[in-house]
Length: 271
Length: 288
Ligand SMILES: Cc1cc2nc3c(=O)[nH]c(=O)nc-3n(C[C@H](O)[C@H](O)[C@H](O)COP(=O)(O)OP(=O)(O)OC[C@H]3O[C@@H](n4cnc5c(N)ncnc54)[C@H](O)[C@@H]3O)c2cc1C
Ligand SMILES: Cc1cc2nc3c(=O)[nH]c(=O)nc-3n(C[C@H](O)[C@H](O)[C@H](O)COP(=O)(O)O)c2cc1C
Image (cartoon, rainbow over all chains, first blue to last red):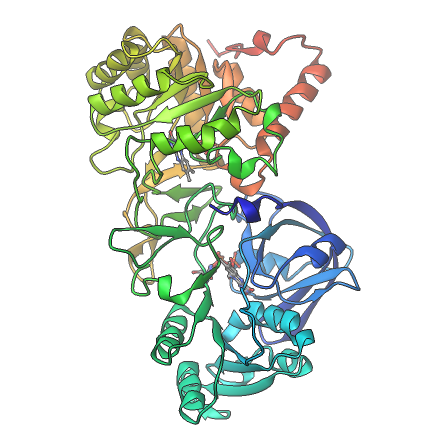
């Protein structure tokens, strides 16, 4: 089980460089960490201690968003949904963040030059932007499919365009572009003849399940970034188990076996 | 020491924590056969703590002995095996197997895990059942035997005494406290098994009280645990009568929490001019 990954994790005390809002409830937290910026891979996550005291008690996991190797920083993009993220939103440059990193595995990118589909739902864009950032310099075509409930909740469009990716948008309410869930956008692209080597997806569980079904139907490999409540992030509490497809009951840990999984492995209708 | 189930099999922690600095390393509870564990969600956060119902997943004792123990033997830290079963014969078989192995300093009987459906609970809620499993294991090994007790009983002192009389060399306490949390919007319990075990600072005052009751009732050493985050927390247990302490849930927040406790205890002794920590064991000055 993931010693390969957990092997290099440690607690870092990282200076906050910026903590700005790209819009809506979202915040981008930029942290100075030259070593981590050089070492972390797209898809990996960090576990942030939000409180000085005991509330909230556990760390909060966040995928890595942008990595600036030259500038020696990396960032997180988070939705302010509760107590922990509410505390983080108040951090300012000059503060320091207690961050356990790097954690988890990372996206595998198979050899070849064919286009990659990056399918994101809401804040699920985060690890996919990191992936695009890593792949863009190779010149491989990237096609981002961004889904949101409404146009104003869209996230990451500028990132993908800046990285040279083709971007298509779908909204549940039809306020922009493709009207419908993002998996139906993927299906529409495939139907019109678009070809991809791999589909990568991150977002709400139902969305990833739907995307992986479309990918499976088209015979495409699909990798997903999973979420589960976790206490430690390094494989010892065994709280973040996800049931996988197997003849017998079998679980894998999101923190050290994941968070990136081959979608064919996941039993979607299980918690 | 580390608390079972919060430090894996040591190997997961080796790059983050200097294992040689630990007083002892207690591994995640092992069973005879491999087990998948409970369905998700397995954990939820609660005020100053968490509820878990992990269900003792693991690859079984033979896998541990072949794959993990050799790794741990590269360190000087004593390794304590934690074992659990559904029947007395299973405990006995586990203990007999561990008894043959070098590199195992002691065996902890997890007769207190509240999670496995037909599992441990039955043993440590009843003095006679506790005595039964401890005496069977006593006959199966000459290694030190630790009985780890559940707090989910009316009189933990009576259980501790039963374990002592049946030949236990030490008592470990406490395991998690049975608990429940409900999501009011979905009306669902927050963990899949509905109820689970509460741990973390939220349980510390209960744990200190129970350790004090146990230490007052038995002559064998008591290993205290339950919500220890720092040296001051550990000192409460020591003053209540614990000769050793274990750090559990705190490790999830800070992987090196156990080392922080050790450093803090050393600093406290220096500051107070106390030569040996033994002087503090059971030194609580109770009101009369
Ligand atoms: C591997 C991994 C990567 C993640 N990456 C990101 C990321 O890049 N950006 C980001 O914004 N979030 C990410 N998350 C989710 C993030 O960890 C949670 O949103 C965060 O823990 C909420 O903390 P809080 O204290 O603010 O909320 P709490 O006070 O704990 O909860 C507030 C509300 O948010 C809900 N909530 C809590 N945790 C989650 C969750 N994991 N998923 C959905 N809803 C939740 C609760 O049910 C509750 O209604 C990731 C999670 C994992 C496991
Ligand atoms: C996630 C988790 C898993 C645990 N697994 C075990 C276990 O396998 N065996 C055991 O004897 N105790 C287990 N425990 C109980 C702890 O060892 C300890 O007795 C209890 O959590 C109280 O200490 P703490 O508050 O410091 O965690 C577990 C606790 C937690 C939180």
